Picture 1 (tube, rainbow, N blue to C red):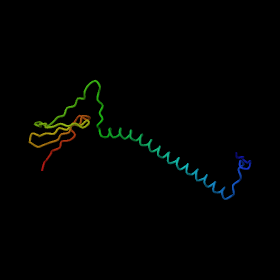
Picture 2 (cartoon, rainbow, N blue to C red; picture 1 turned 45 degrees about the vertical axis):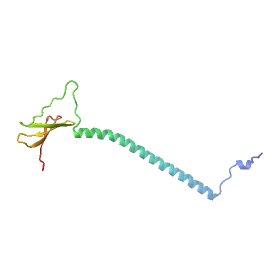
Picture 3 (cartoon, helix red, strand yellow; picture 1 turned 90 degrees about the vertical axis):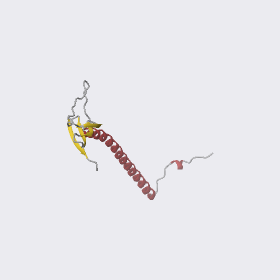
Length: 131
């Protein structure tokens, strides 16, 4: 069929111009691989940073907000909300450790009284005025 010459199997040296082009291409390949590697490491670093910060910030936010409260396993939490005398409760709402009592005071004014169970005291007394 076809006969392979020994001359075709031996690599002939490239002329100087082609050798310079080959070296530039190899250098470009090395730089491109380096840039891609640095970019990949930056993306992976950002992902790891986000995952570690998400756990820390959620714990910090719950501690700052005061909404996390340790409930004892053997007994319920006991807290007394001392509402003013003559206060009539119309509605109650709960937000974490805070309980909001909305109603009318003895003088007829509408009020919102907020009791915080984590500190066992009334933290706000708001008079509601409608205009």
